Length: 135
Image 1 (cartoon, rainbow, N blue to C red):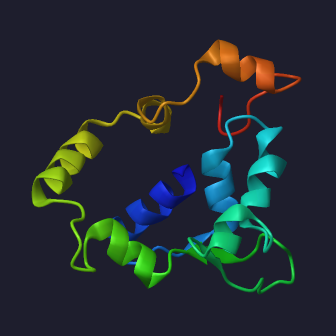
Image 2: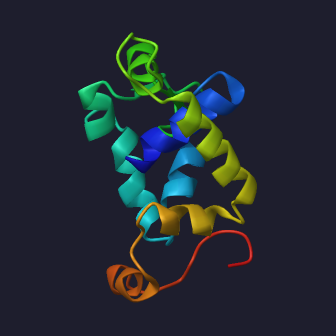
């Protein structure tokens, strides 16, 4: 679900949902151990790709995660209401813009989205080491 939110945000913010798979995986994984697990979402047999909710372009460098992922137009239309069905209202867009302006960091975003608290997270990974910049 978070992968769809990331791609939808990219679509709304830039007009295109194309993002390198490796960037999405880094955003989804909070522990080093989760990097491999999250990469599986974007494999051809992965749930997101198999369901058609996300499209992964062929790997330009013949490396599995050098590809880009994007939302098909029907998914964007459904989520944004372009299909004629009720979608995201103008008020919801304003509320989201306000939320985004007040957002301190990605950690706050994931906590707001219902990410497990630190204790639960520590149990999932063996070493508890965190990846990323200065964490």
